[in-house]
Length: 295
Image (cartoon, rainbow, N blue to C red; front, side):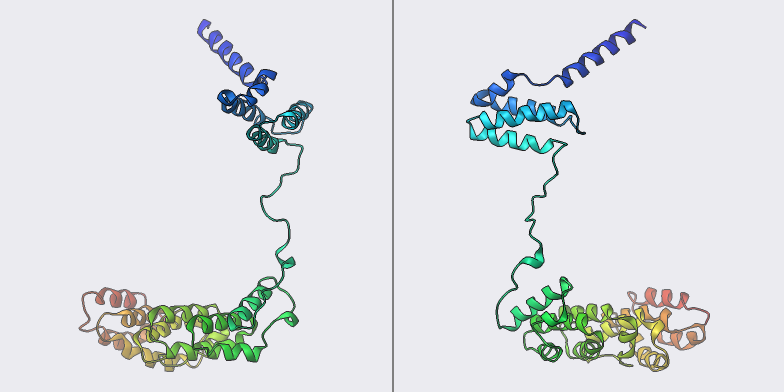
């Protein structure tokens, strides 16, 4: 019992010392280089304790404001200004320019890049289409630009302006590319199209002749398989030959699409296609066959 009493007494001493406000001597130490850092920390630690507006908080921060005005040392003044940010009675200020983005002037320029940047800004801010620096026809023309980055940006913005106009252009573009990184960008844009438009313009056989573009077609087919309708049978016929061959990006994408397109009734044809596959591809084929739906 005696030990418990001692612990309570120690706790009371600690609370009393923590609540004790810095004295005038502490504020005077702000002008002394050797003592300035300790004084700043003491004032800051005490200021953090005021979480709600109260008469005590008001009196304390008025004292800090007075000290900030009378202190001649620039470093001490800056420290006290930081302390005043803990005043619960003041409205928090964001360290950002309060000027809204739509108040800034639009970029000036006549190059395709500046016009595309201007259009993207208009779309991001959901401004009127009348403010667009490019017509739909001009945007379609830029999708054929010789620079891939410019053409791809035009494709992306065209998808946002008119998805129905962008869908056939994106599919056509996918079939002409061979570089994997470029194919990936176009594939991503096709997957961002409305599902009905992506399926409507989807070719019934692999887009293009490159391995990368064929694999992208197979991946998109797997994702959009439930919206294909009648072309589904033609797509299945085109996908079946792609299941055979060495393990690569295309054959792996083709086997990944199998459970989305085929059913248990197709098991015989799929089992035949799985014969003689490499050790890398055989487990993927087995997993696809095990995942076949009943219908």
